[in-house]
Structure formats: structure tokens, C-alpha cells
Image (cartoon, rainbow, N blue to C red; front, top):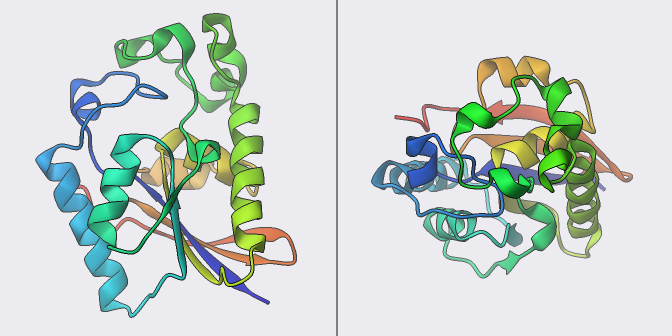
Length: 192
């Protein structure tokens, strides 16, 4: 049976504006971030998309985003957290590596995670969610790096990365027979 997963990035945060590395550390949504989440909620409502399950990362920026998208009950899952950047958490983004290829192991030297670890935990967590009875249309709110690395496990993500993975962008996946297929990425001016 085909199932649908809407994997969404959280709304804009204070650290996004300040250009700080934000993995397991957290910062609040900005007013713009709250507006982005409300717009995403409208997107789903206008299309008649009804979720039978919702989940998010344990980060407050994700639960706050989800609560603005829908008022349904949800589950917080550690497997949906952003990459852990170790000692670079909260530091300036200029300390980030420059390419996805560099990112694979770059943060290990600072006590962080590898991109492969993030990819594997996202894939495991989302596969377990989609395999549950009654989970035919799921909303999951996560993070840009986590969403990117999940996509990297399915296909070459570079074309989508070039288009931008802005706050509240939505990845629509089909899930069937244990496999995810990207159907579309909805960017619909969430960044305004």
C-alpha cells in the first residue's frame, strides 16, 4: 500500500538569523518563522491534506512549528533531530564546512556526528513511523541537515540543494514496500 510522508523543515529561528550553527542546541522561532509555519498549515488545508499521524524532532523549534501547522496530537522523536555539531554548536556558521562532501566526516573532529549517522537514524526512524498501522499520511517536522541527509540516502540530493532548502520547505515522499521516493519539494514562498 502506498503511503505519503510530508517531511518538513522547521520555521526560521533566532540562530538562523544570527547565522549560528544550530544542531542539538536550540533557539526560538522568529515572527517570520511562525508566519512560515502558519503558511505551511494553510498549504495543507487548502489541498485537503489530512494527516493520520504527526511527529517531530525533540527540538523546540520543530514542535513549535508543528503546533502552528496543525493542532493534532503528535510525538517527539529523537531520531528526527538535526546533526550534532559537537563543539561547534552555537558558533558562527563561518566555521561550517563548505561542501556536502566535506560534511560527511568534518564534525567528527569536534565530537559531532557524521552525515552517514544522521542519514541512517533518519531513515530508520521514518521507516519505523511509516510501517505503523494507520500511518498512511504522515507529517514529520525536522531540520535542513537531517532532511538533506535523509534525501541523500534515497537519491542524489544536489539538484534540490541548489534550489534551496529554506525554512518550512516540504518534501513529499511516497512510501511503498519499504522504499521512499521523492515526489516533489514544496517551497511555495515560505521564506517571505
